[in-house]
Image (cartoon, rainbow, N blue to C red; front, side):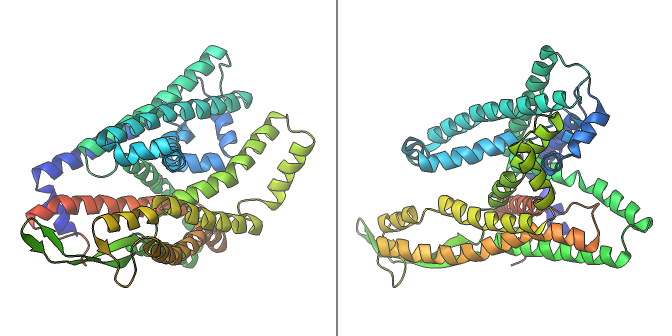
Length: 431
């Protein structure tokens, strides 16, 4: 693999694109250290320790949230806007028509709608965060002018990351937004390694537990690779065609149905539903306005619905399974696949075109989605149980981060291979 990577970097175009990605990463790291002024860091660290939701956002932002920089919200508002637009494309016939028949112009318009929605979501999130931080004494300056400045700065930071991601997509290699999330996660790993090493050297964790933790982490990452690469190939036969005076013989091909059509979205949905209400109640309790039923619900969640409790993990598992089925049904429309096969004169051997083809594809999709949903559900709850069981609490091995890191790495490798295909280089992954 290293030899092939070296060969790829010898190609001027790829070397230029890789260099631009690294240049963009340097800007991202620089922006992490551009902090907001007049911040009480001690008070901010107390707020961070009050709930798991901020820790999740901080992990995805490369530590920008912990430093309270201008990109503290990371690229999360843009991801939420993209997910909402994807769901709305299925719900609203106008957007669905624009996405299917609008061509390049339609995609540009949907992209513009996504940017405007990102600004709205970023403004709402920044306002909520700024008010929470002011109520908890994080800001030395509590004036309205400073609060507006904080909101504008954080929204501008998110828009800068969105623009940077688009530049990486156009001038680099891979999906820019995914790569920004990727580098944000990877930047946290040196800190976790140092903390784990310090804990092991002081006797906080045994060497055996640490070795077992590393082995299990490697096994999980290998299994994620199989999950992303796995697909069910449905055979398709193309009918013979007559074009002018020539007859073209039918040929056999296949429809690659991915094992994991939901990606990491199902886990993000599930963990957002679990953490957002709990974090909101925690903020209300800290501000002193939680009375009556709100205080009772907040106390019940803290006692019986803690992130390491059995009830929390059972609900987490079920939500991941449900959202995996839900999102897979949105991503892959079997009706459209069957219609496209019928229009092109192709068919699945032994299956009649039309509704029988839709039923057959739904049956296959249900089976592979069941396997993927159970795997993702176990992956969601396993890291937490693994950390508690082996007492390795200084290295955050989140399911979301593992799926993103492995998925983005595989996608980038595939895109480099596609650019090298014309030059007859061997791939990074032997098949």
